[in-house]
Every structure is written in structure tokens, then in C-alpha cells.
Length: 107
Image (cartoon, rainbow, N blue to C red):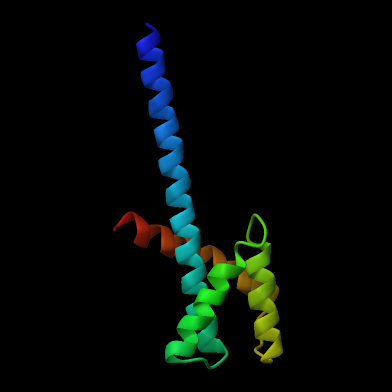
């Protein structure tokens, strides 16, 4: 009886750990996709676009949630005078999260 409970508990812990890793990979992928998309909007190409995408990924480690990424990207768009509303950026982030999830799940 105790072994069954311990087995079930371990299975739940493993599933939780797997779900957390999956979520992390989806967020990192979404941020990379977002960085590449915004790089296009601010006229970065090649290595500069890749470097910018890495900056966007790194910006997500400042605090929990999406606000740190949103603030960075929105400020960069404004600094380059790109006409992109807050609402449109949040929608893009949502759409790219779905795309990232699909990509990660199909790997």
C-alpha cells in the first residue's frame, strides 16, 4: 500500500517536473521568435538579429511573467519609432506562444 502511494507520488512529481520543463522551453522559444520578429521591425539582420533575439530571451529572467520581456521589446520598438501598439505587441506575444508550443511539442 505504501509503495503504491509512493509510486503515485513519484509519478505526479515526474509529471510536474516534465510540465515545468516544457513550459520553460515554450517560453524561451516564444521569446526567441519574438526577438526575431521585432529584429525585423527595427531593421536588424543576420547576426545582429540573432543577438537581439538572445537579448530578448535573457530579458525574461529579470522577473516572473511576461512583463519584463514586454517592457524591453516595447521600449526598443518605441526607440526606433516603430508604430506598434501595446495591444498589438501583447497579441503578437500570445500568438507566438502558441506557435512556440506547437514547435516544441512536435520536436
